[in-house]
Length: 221
Image (cartoon, rainbow, N blue to C red; front, side):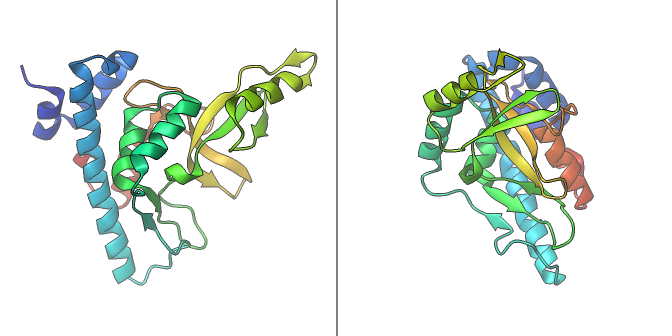
């Protein structure tokens, strides 16, 4: 029976991701974990190739990037940074972990429009707690005990907000003055939903859609 990685390489890319996602946290058990990690690593290796090709083509066409560095490679101590992040927020999806390890940070926006953008690990984590349409935001570098105490001390309608939600930033939304697209953690699955109010698009699906806009076949990743 072929492994998930073998099926992915053979062309069953979206089907493999859908099946692994449906398994949830079970992918953290061996031997499934090794296979799922290999799929995520192969996917993000292809994503990095696409990003590098897009940046080169856009530069050749005199495209005006809004960022001086449209593609920042992962820092040399990325493993330590991921470990530190997960100590604070809990486990992060394999899709995001492999993005941090292999791709880094990408911002292909021009000065007027937001196009393809994925924040790097240096922008993480943020903490939000949603109540109705109001978001309470806590300092990004506060220790976890201080964050929890801040929520416990904040009350609205005599209800203490004692359960902070950690989110990783995916893309800014400066137009509306909000934190933009995020993915909630902890999340032990291979992937998770992103976008405002969880629009049921996973990170891998977001990448496929973005690369399709850039002229790539979505099935390449």
